[in-house]
Amino acid sequence: MIQPVGRKTVSLLVQHRTSASKRALLPAGRCVVVRGYQGEAGEGRPTLSAQEEALLKIARPKSEEIFAKHVEMPKLDQIPRANLGPEQAIDAADEAKLNLDIRRKRLIYRSKQRGWLEVDLLLGTYASEHVHTFAHDELNQFEAFVNLETIDIYNIITLRLDIPEHMKTPTQDSVIERIQKWARGSPLGKADPEKYRAVKSSAKLI
Image 1 (tube, rainbow, N blue to C red):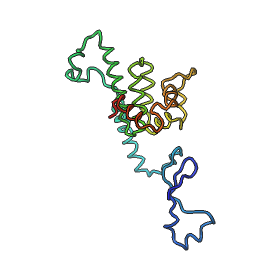
Image 2: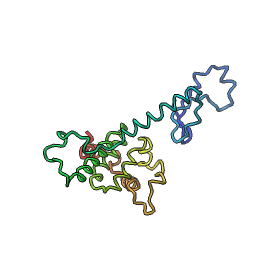
Image 3: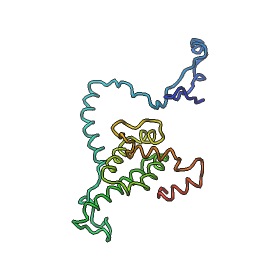
Image 4: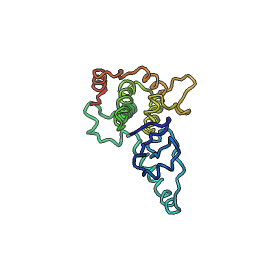
């Protein structure tokens, strides 16, 4: 039997796996639990050996380098000319505009490919509808949001977590604050299969 305990823990009741003699030692009304998903709980304090600490020092820079390459936006000079299409011939006068267009497309793609269906739908739909209108500063804000962990993106969009302080603005009009306001309006409908299908199709999520 699975039962939620508080806000942070889902506990699996395993009292039936405990012997009768051991159950007799438990206080009345108590049971043995196995701690599972921790939700907003902290990560705890890791206990690493000296050898593990040494390995961590080697691995962390490599991990950060890999992540930096993962989130880096492609530049025009890094893209094969054949991939641009005949209508996107490189012109010095249009180079900045083309770089901006590439960045927008990359952000839309990353918004749709988070790996969680709920985030793909919410963030991908919002990106499809709004990113093409974003100016440089708005793209910076949106990119910082996309670079968060997927679970944090989901919790912020669905109002389970507050927006990080550095992403807020005094006017409450940052890109992330606008995303939250948009999400409050149930843009995917409420248990409406037809609306769900229409949103997936219009945002090219199928």
